[in-house]
View 1: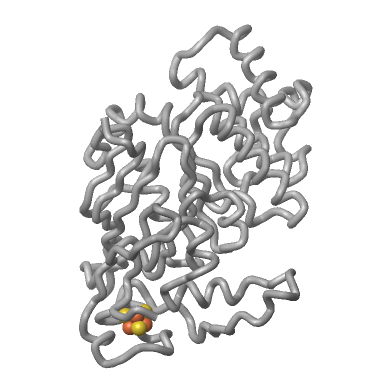
View 2 (view 1 turned 120 degrees about the vertical axis):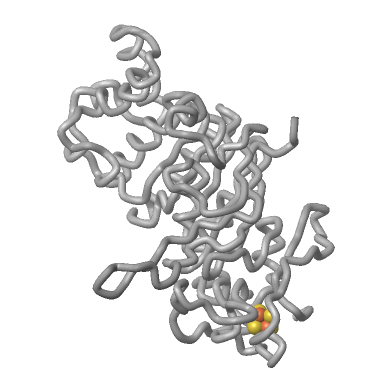
Length: 327
Ligand code: SF4
């Protein structure tokens, strides 16, 4: 058995772009374009990048809500890449997802109790009495009263709705949870409560997380390791503290520079301003995909794609960067 719970190898998710009168394929949106990553058991990998960089598409491909164009997804030593919906059903018990907007992910016509116990019905687990008791225990686990089971999602605040979403996700005692921007829509004070709840549940249940967010400060709080994604590709990976303290890729530096610094003694960090928008994944730049926004770009960067090469990590873990130069 591999030491990793999840291994993604050279994954591509391309969407055909159609045009013309006959709606013929004109090209492809390269939303995920050759991503490799891994997550250990009980580990959290933070996946960070600007909106539109392909991180949510990658998350959905990992749980096979989207079909990969190429590459391989290994989960718990099972190859998920080409499994049919029927073959995926038993795997879905072990891989769950938490979405950004709890209001959209919860059916407002069902009570909270019905929403949480849906998974038991789908997988034929327990009888109605067992399910009701289990729902009450799950609600307690996420900090909600048992009486919440008889109410509807719209009766709750945004933070409480995310707690309901988390209760649904952990109902089947999964091994891996894909958290897709789970706190982005919440107030800052509520964000930390939800992050702490996720950390507590991880400790209790031994969960692994793929934590997707655009905010590097939020990701650092919860992650063991971080992967930085830009235009469908990984730019840098490493331990959360290493990435934050000694970023090696110009894009990572720009993301860190954009974080407000509450500590006045650290305000002397050099500013790296990220100009312009993320280019279209339909026509990604040649060579290094970041070259159109990189202040270090040279002629080589426009021609040659940098490989994700290994660096020596000071924390003893793995560290990689996709840049031609040691900046
Ligand atoms: Fe910038 Fe060139 Fe490095 Fe890409 S390879 S990040 S363009 S310096």
